[in-house]
Length: 237
Image (cartoon, rainbow, N blue to C red):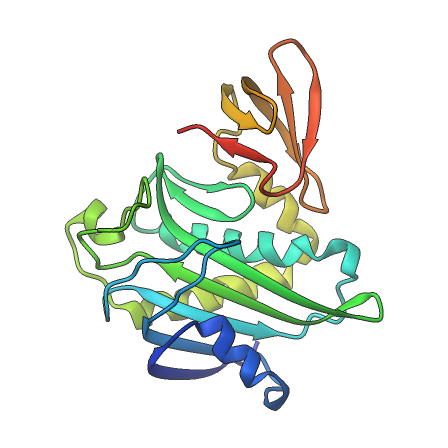
């Protein structure tokens, strides 16, 4: 893709910034901020980031070739792209459903996807990313953050990482039909039984698959299989 990239010093949220500028951007677009005053995670979650230390950006694409029923492809492609880049520098990288990037049992990246649908297809998709790069101390109540610098003892060029992620996303998008299989191969806890919690109980289960529309399928020890939407089940770390 022919990316237009804009760097800004500060905003409340790069996703919100892109939304305000949505109708002015016809080509693939990326805004990068040194600092977010109200960085967003999924739902009501926020994203902690020390000024100038991490990679905070939002991408805008117009994937009108993707039907609304397959919109989870966008999320999988973005997760695959970042996992591939992070894996260049550290081992044991995985994707925690639906799209958090983990190293071991620690979260290194969060992704927030906002799709705007029109006529049964995706008119616009905003892909917000917070990747922990050079921050060494985390003071929020997030349970398990980690950064590339924590893991390697090195400082990273965030602009270099951005270019690698954009190139990785381009490669994912060029092979869109292979996105789901690559996503499934990288899933966190993809083999074995682990503890989870839903609205009814805490239980042990194994991950069977993630469906094309994004639903998580778990099988409990007693063989009972259940289908979950996002936020209906919690991983117990």
